[in-house]
Length: 593
Ligand SMILES: Nc1ncnc2c1ncn2[C@@H]1O[C@H](COP(=O)(O)OP(=O)(O)OP(=O)(O)O)[C@@H](O)[C@H]1O
Ligand SMILES: [Mg+2]
Image (tube, rainbow, N blue to C red; front, side, top):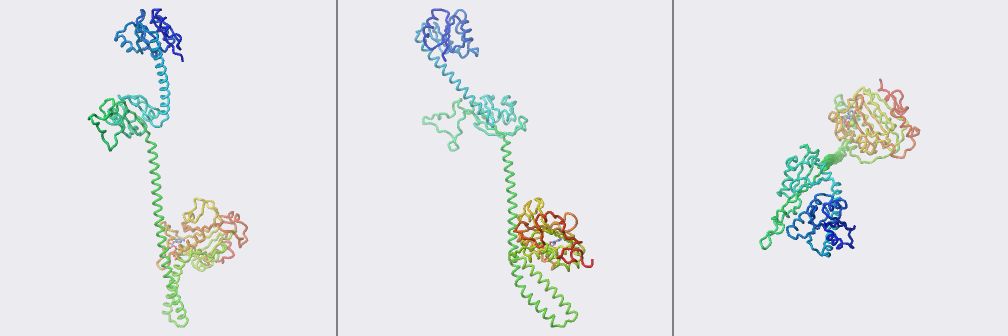
């Protein structure tokens, strides 16, 4: 842009000389013949530079300059005074009023041209600098406004010079309007005051502004002195003096160099995020501790299981050793029974011995079952058939105890791979347990069916056996009307040797053997109390889709038919409709009833 220059002189010949000195160069020239006119043109046209005569009748040059500088609209116009007064005092006065130069008359036209050229260059550079400054300020403002951390600039007197939006949000606009001494809490103004006063170069403080009602937040505040030198490294506490004994430059003797001389910067951070992270960490930590505890428990259980395994093996060894002598005794007693004629007393003693022998044999067989080889002889079989066969085996006892049996066996059950002998052992154990619990006059309910499992009904045993909600399972329910199971016994039922039966009547191995066998079939067993009414409830689950399903023996058509029939299928066996394979006495009610 072409610089515009206003030439001011009340003497026309002087004006002409000025005009001719600059005419023909790249300037736009304006002319005023007095102080008042100069001001008027300056306000209207905003020239870049003014060549201003000092002595003029209406308004002298110094007054014109004073008025120009007083008005922000004209204050940036560069003023070069022209005067015949060459006293140093005049020059100083002119420059003090804001003039950029002072030229004494008479002057050489070339000198005027040269000075004007220099001042135009300076003016242009000034403008460029100002524009660059504005750009930098914009960038700085953009950075400061996008920061999530608050930044506050304080001057040396503790007055807020600037604050970014985050700082205003975190500290509150009201607080930033107050003088530093009035900031709350008092430790805040004290902390900042120490930095401004040069006692500290840098400090960090955590403040809960919510407690003072100034802001709703806990914040972390970092206060650094502007102009602060880097903190001395811990290893070299003081900079060494130079050989002349003078303090090292920057050693701190210059007051302008003192820390805090230029004010301070506050960086404010919202502590809630950190607190949230800390809380989340604590939570994770707790969860970890919890799973650690659970792991420990599981480990203890494993150790316990390993111990039991050893005990089992030991027991099996002992049982094996005892089995043969028992067989010899049994043979001997059979022989004696046939060859001797016993009187009444001897016959009673003999019968007791037979009883004891039987008992010993049961215990030994139990021990051997408990520790037997873990293998199955699987063939497709019907669960219903196995139930009926097992019921037949306990028929006599059921009748004696006057126990009523209700069977609800789904007719369309698919055959499953079962080890028939072992499954019978399972069923017998469970039936015997129920009978022993009821003692006399109870009801034993046995139900089978295909069942779509719901997630919430899966106990730990079922989950351990791999059952998931939505799976189709072959389910067997055995319910009795006995006293049920005490809450503190529920966890121990499957422990080997756990029994509530009187000494010598139960080995406590029945359920652990049962569970082993069921687990070998990839099934699960859960025992608890019935939801309604008195008594215990045993639930056995087998994977219905565990193996290819051969046609059922009773000619059942499909799984769908069996599922559709539950919970009490149309063909369910009940008191009034005995199944073909179960002898009458068992499922109606005890013989003689
Ligand atoms: N139907 C049931 N009702 C009440 N308690 C039961 C029932 N079934 C099992 N129990 C409890 O579980 C315990 C353990 O049973 P488990 O079959 O393992 O051994 P046991 O029956 O005592 O001995 P054994 O099986 O050698 O005769 C029983 O002593 C009894 O307390
Ligand atoms: Mg038992």
